[in-house]
Length: 215
Length: 333
Image 1: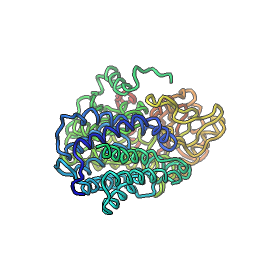
Image 2: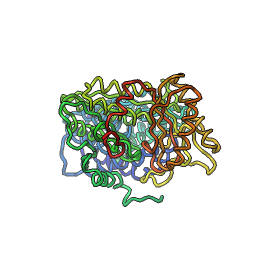
Image 3: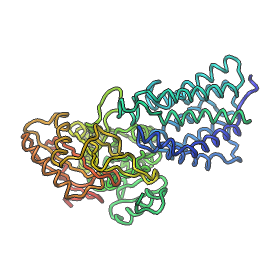
Image 4: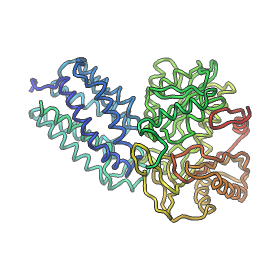
């Protein structure tokens, strides 16, 4: 198990897969956001990850993993705007701090870094599970990853299960009544709509599963 | 989508360049990161006042940079809050050594981005005091929502806090004016038509030809209810009643009435609205001492209006009447 690890190339592939998915789904995310928010989530995330791709994904960039992740966080903070910028930015900054200056992250450390990122999102957004936010996809995803790894499964199948759990968590936001963000202004009218932040968060874990299984 | 733009991605930056061309005597525009500061900033020995938010609400906030109002403004993408690097750079440019007050509208994104910027600025030793504006009575304030939205009172707070800073007020005194405005102002808006964010290319919501949305937010967020169109006087009554009840305003109170256009409503209609506002205030025994009528906090080309009432005292009247010289508001100079 300890031999399983991700390196900078895998993380870059993750970010690339995610950026592509965001581009493809930008209109869909924006539609989800228009239903219960202000209709810019897809546009903002696509803008942010296009910038990530340009500035961070230079294959010649051999920074240790924390430098790579911190760079992603700073680009997101300065390009995304809205609530998603600080939240996704904080996710990658906290992930970087937890990862430290290593070249490879063994599977348990990868899970710990992801968990630190999710904790950062919880703190920055002052949200709790069930509030109809990103956390409703991220928390079940990362908890599933940690549990599955602890059961002795390999990293690729564990990430597959984590991505599926995040997607299930995302779908579970449909009946929820939003308690944070702009959607909360709708009260009961927010029920019946899938949360756009939970949706882009589910994509994030799916992209990681795709990037690792392809390595 | 029919808009006078060149390219969707360039709208904000090109508008800022146009603003620089129009008002070189008043403001300095910085691009990448985008922010606007008062010409000659920083003003040494005076507290600075910064605000910011999504673009698309012009003249708010960039149009309020200048003497007696904002020291700096940070425009985000359209309807998207500015980013921490913009706010941080703007803060460094305007800090005259006595600290910086942030006037922040209560939206999740704005709150988080200003919070991050304040952390960065404080790490540099700049004193920052951040005050939230949440005057929209259309939204229920509870533990289960992000709280009330900041709308019309923002313009009044920027003007009055800017006047207090111009007088030489301390960081605490200037921030206290923002709090006083927020505590004594209430607003509610309505929409006749939706608006289209250029990057989205289609309207933010649908509204039938014979419908209106009461309690609309400044980004086209749904309000309290959607209903059949009614005469202006009846619409005013629907907006002003919750505003009066919420504070509540009482007989004998001195009031500033701010009748705002959402961007697509002509001034002649705003005066029709103002006529009824004045009637209602008189019926209730309130003293209408100051007014502001025009499109000052807009939602692109949305048609509709909002009504903000501010309870005045001697300090607020003095600050309101003090000189102001910005691209969008000017008197006393």
